Length: 111
Image 1 (tube, rainbow, N blue to C red):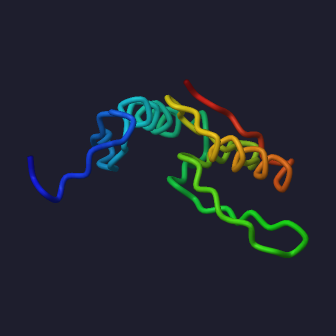
Image 2 (image 1 turned 90 degrees about the vertical axis):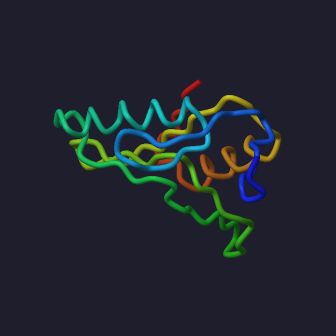
């Protein structure tokens, strides 16, 4: 094993999707391929990968959240799509903060 290879702590197998992006799990990689197919077919307008959202409460930066995908629908609305195998306490906290701060953006979890 290469000393530069970092093993996933949840034993997920990473790899590249058909678009050439690296994803840390097969679930995320396969979902990326599905989103790209929806985009190609014109069912959605755009997909952003790992967009960073600031989590601010009362003007104070609490942290950031980088969901797997931000999807722009054909109606110009945004949705956040997060692929999840292992749900952690940290992720639940960030998800709850995200939903409180960005109530207009639906948070969709793919398992």
